[in-house]
Image 1: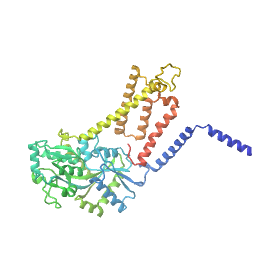
Image 2: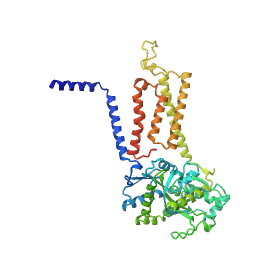
Image 3: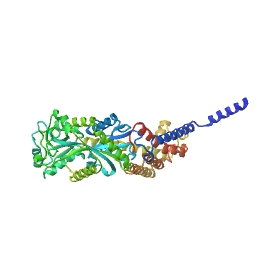
Image 4: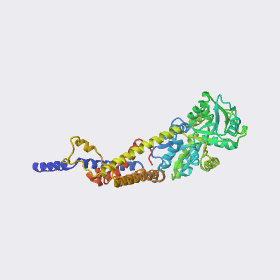
Length: 495
């Protein structure tokens, strides 16, 4: 008996020793990946399997940096929902700023329509589509509700020679393209200037890209811009810093700031108000839309929200259903009635230079890597140099090893064909992420597979190793682990 146990133990040890370490590691990685995949799928049920909604926290994408008007409004709703236990789950705010809210809205558009990702965004999405910054608009989302209403203030710095809206518009007509209007190009403030231009034929501002309310305030009081538009709440906050209002976009004077003349009083039919629209990705179930609309209605009735809106000089208004659709259609019509493709726009030169420099560096690095790979596989040389080859006393072995033979005409042609294939493949991959409603993992698997077929099969690594197992590991495991780390671990939304 003892001898049999010893033989079994010895055989087991010998079998283990015969196993290659990389085989053990590879098997373990696959087992762990499969377990995590099953756990992830069970913890993220599909929308069709839910009988109670929501079953987990809901992410609210705010396509601006923290501290802005939209961010403050979203956090106000978050606080009211948690304080009064109106949802049963947490609302998680995720700020994804940049590019005039188009980065955040793009993430929201590509999110799964399962009711667990929504977005708060005013008509910036509508203006971005109209100006050509993005190819999508409200038709790519399911609108939930419109909340709050804040009037716009046209303002200049305290020592500006322009005392009224009439004076500054007359100057814009007398000297077109001379007065600088601080704006976030393609956003509602930009359209406020365009709508004013339409009211007085011949008038034209020169628009400069500045950003949010704080940046526009700095541009005006710093003398870099002559005029800009602010929400009523922003104006009250910035007024003490040297800002002076010359008009409000209300049908009549606001009792909270009765000293500010309306645009209509000065002869300009400019009536506008910002509202915060809430959006789900296209295809979200109507029952979930109705549930969140009810949540927003309940939050807007709470004392927490009403007090905060009063401090921000915003009306506690909420629109849902047909009323919201009518408001949305009216805003789309108003935005489309103006031409946002004005050539009189000052571009953001530093950002353009930075982007161009970065693209050049990436391109140089990319070409260098491809050149190295092509040289390594086309030279046909081995790692062992012929030791018997004659050489002079001045020529060391190291020097011979370091010499890279030049590419032949045939290999140069193959090199540029490979570069072209990789470039086309990269373009197709990026376009697929942008326009195809497919999961990031499957698109990336296809991309890695095709990329490997283009540059990998004849490389040194593939010649020295078993190509298929390595190829399978890279194609299948890499996209899933990247998705797990960024999406689940770091909470960075992927398509």
